[in-house]
Length: 282
Image 1 (tube, rainbow, N blue to C red):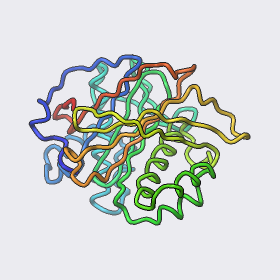
Image 2: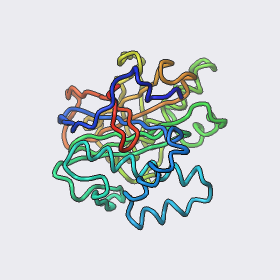
Image 3: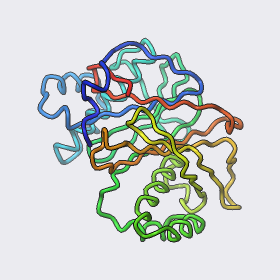
């Protein structure tokens, strides 16, 4: 992916951010941009708790240890743009659904992290459950076999009705959406992927020439699954060639509200950051 930190995109800042009730902030960072920056990486290490450090050090490969360090510094740093809590002072615990939550924040911040090859994202909102997923669509997988095994019959029918050239892209639409749904719940694959279906209207809009966004997305459930489609909203985000030269990344975000949110005018905002070095709104 072309660097998100190009200076022409905007000027970095460390100013505090406001987060409106109808906003979803999507943060991105590229761990490879920090390779070799030993002094900064050492500073990142001081932000982590002993438990986080032990988990990070258990990774066998240096690249995985590097990415794990960036991930922890990334979330600690970006949360500090919303509240007067230093990055090293954030406290986390597993919530009721075994999903990490902050326990010392003056705001009802909710967040979720996802990563793929050389890209880490975090979606942040207020109050509501949120899940996000990012995938590299260039990976070498037999995606249609995966779809036949895990998707709902409705999704499988729609997928295979498409021209063959479009099927791989649609697979990643469904996969990222499904991941964002189960991550918003915080229950992982305890929710069978065939128990819910997404229907994607291909109407789209452009965000600053950098992202194409689809938001006319409907969710339905198998008869035996207890859930309410009227409290869910989802988005598909496609980085354009301006920042993703090969256009091989797919992002999905899902929000679960406490009441009907179908008429809520959600606003997506995008931020690029390198931990402790400031951010750019893009």
